[in-house]
Image (cartoon, rainbow, N blue to C red; front, top):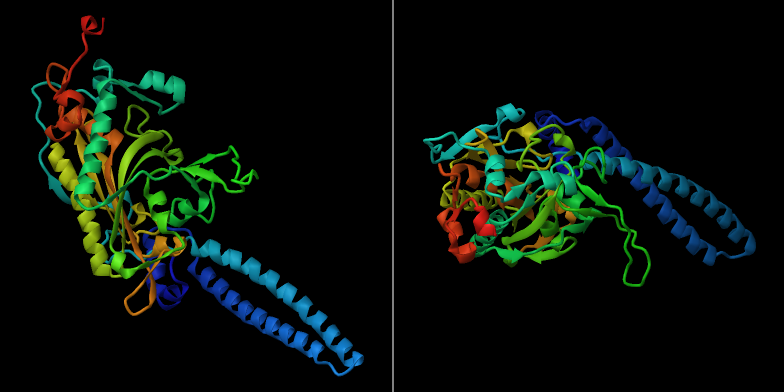
Length: 446
């Protein structure tokens, strides 16, 4: 969420951001509502002060007649105040709805446009060359008996899957490798809650509006009620996170940190749940787009210093690039265009690994800099050395996601005999330091 003062003072920039991000929010309406809200607030404060003055006058009235006159006048003031407070509440609600949709003004060098305007700004490695026709991860998973999509759909429904045998082990090795790397890089490791209250998802920007919209938000709501410690039924709505980001960002919600604590670097391992309602009909086969998966996420809280935040953002991305390189995956880096990035993002980069079996690039990570857009929603501030309070800048980036790195490894490291070579950096995390996933012969199973 932006600062309303910033919006008032930078109307042209904010309007351009609305246009460039292709948003359906009316800045003119917001400014009109803001003016009405400000005027009403002044009237309400004036009436409240007058009401308090009348209360004092009643106490000091010289006789009953004077007291009665003041009481009548007080009733009139109260009636006016009730009306104005009602108007203020109504206007205030509309103000918040509009404010929640206001975008961060993106960096000047962010490409303008939709998905087709995304720019490739880096590439590493080369596409692997095979002496045979490469198979997809779907074919390899079935032949190696490490992925079962049919029974996954039977038990879980559309986009369900089972990882099994060396497939399950390989994915856990990817997660352990990524967590180990993040700790080496100075990130605090956490396993955060995946069942969270509504405020953390609004605060991190995972709701398109002020609250959950089942038609718009790719979030699962948990409808089962739960009890508080005193036995009463909880009034909080609960949701499953699509990434560890909301849980990590909300860790310090409503708190004021000390400047000496920044930058604060955290990484979280979590199961991730996504309804994918906006992706109906896309990537319907295989593991590329699924409802649940595992991921290691990076989050950084920083001082309100743009140059420092940009450097930290690039540093987070470099860690993911380093892991792609150590895994031996050919990948590219994209600068995401204005209309393809989120409302609150100042800048976004994506990494995409090459999947030869699918013959396409697969998104394997996204690094975003939100500046103070998220921290204003979550109420996370810090106190400077001279005692001033400022909102922190918040950044996040995928360290490694389980399904798409799994896809990339299977398809890039498949061998002619149908086996898959395990990248060297993952071998230490495999039981018995296994180096190859091979077909299991029936006599081996017997």
